[in-house]
Length: 103
Image 1 (cartoon, rainbow, N blue to C red):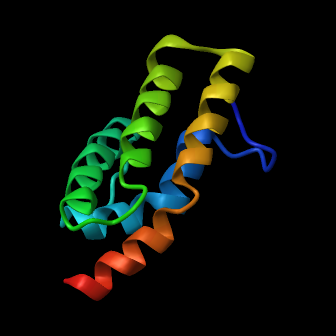
Image 2: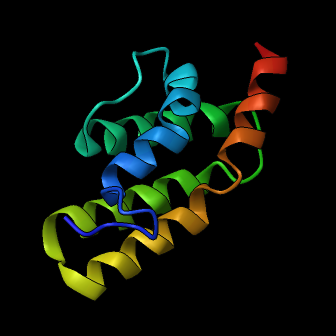
C-alpha cells in the first residue's frame, strides 16, 4: 500500500482521521480495516441522508473511491483515488457534529 506525505499507509490515515466520527453515526465500533470503513461509510451516508444532512451522499462517493483504490489500483492511480476519497470526506466531522445535535 502506498503512503501519504507523512509516511503512513493511506488506509491507516483514513481510519485515524474519520473512523471515530463515522462509527458514531453507524453505532458500531470504529472500523479497523479499510473494508470495514467502506461498509460503515455506506451506512453512515444513509443515516445522515435520512435526517436531511447536506452532503451525506459524499460518503457513498468516497466509499467508491476507497474501494477502487483498495482493490483495483496501485501506485499513482491508487494515490489519486485516495486523494479523491479524501476530498469527499473533508466535511465528515461537520456532518457528524450536526447529526450529534439531532440525536
